[in-house]
Image 1 (cartoon, helix red, strand yellow):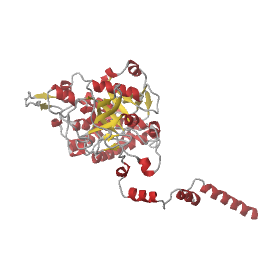
Image 2 (tube, rainbow, N blue to C red; image 1 turned 60 degrees about the vertical axis):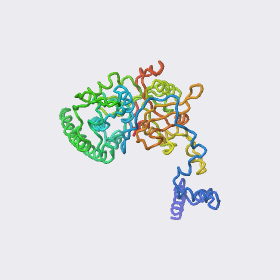
Image 3 (cartoon, one colour; image 1 turned 120 degrees about the vertical axis):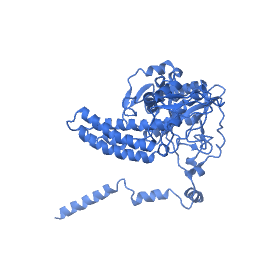
Image 4 (spheres, rainbow, N blue to C red; image 1 turned 180 degrees about the vertical axis):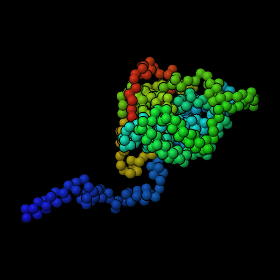
Length: 464
């Protein structure tokens, strides 16, 4: 009996030690508390300041204020700042903003706007269909399978990348803003997305059960079509119904009125941009976590079932910049995306590695490089803008760049954001550029079979 009691005591003692391993026990807490001196006058002053003020107001680096100007040697001709309002459609606005200057010049206009709402409607419809098809394809897997978990976590969203735009415009064409104006829900998309997600998940469960039966492919598709009718109704009531035909005339900046013509969305697109083809463009990526000069493709990262997934060439920054400078010099702006929230000074309209000094404020070092920020999910592309200006030194090496943003003219420097070349290295991710600006070795990468990445890959982060 005594041996049994001793055994229980020893087991309890060992268990106690094991339970304490890795916990914030009293000894560890005292050690941590001892590292912070609450009697130090500097710590007292910092606590008073930090706890009662916005961090960026305190961390702003006064030695850097005014160091980045907004003048550039090479600048693309652009006209007017657009505003995506409270929506995740930056990829759409940026893609259309890359085309606007050509239309404005061609018809001698003071300004021109395509309808983002028109493309948004079809983007939501196509994404709904793609979600249903993915649900059907994976209906034989359990709900907690990683792919199904990802699908039901992400049934629909209004973010995207450039291939989303190219898929839409080739299938549905374009219309002027007057043919399908913005509505409350196109400019404020959060609640509409919430309603769509709820309905899509509900319908997907039904579709999943049907797909697991012996129902024919025709029966499954018929059920899916009926489900999409409900989605169409929600979208039509929220956004208006997209036109199949419309009349339009151009009025140039001198007041000259052109002839009224009737168009379909596709005929309008072809009439305005007869030489434009998305096939002439390629997406570049700077992702230091993966091998350069390789072609990558992200599964399910598209909006149209028969469309192209997000496919890109991974390149080092020096090549990235070489091609971007060539495009700007040729007066061609580019779809570009970045981690816009890092070191962003809204009031100054600048992105600079030295805008805010959080390390000095807290007395704590922040040391991750771009690769480490990506793999730890600290950084990734979050917003698309038009890359349209570059300044260079005496050797024609870039020193700073500029974006045309889509957050309205009151944000930043009259709607533009200027950023240093150092910031480019750390937080620029994607660039869509005409193939004519690429060298032969880069173009040759397009002949490779793409390395397919899963939809939950860190680079999946869509532009919003």
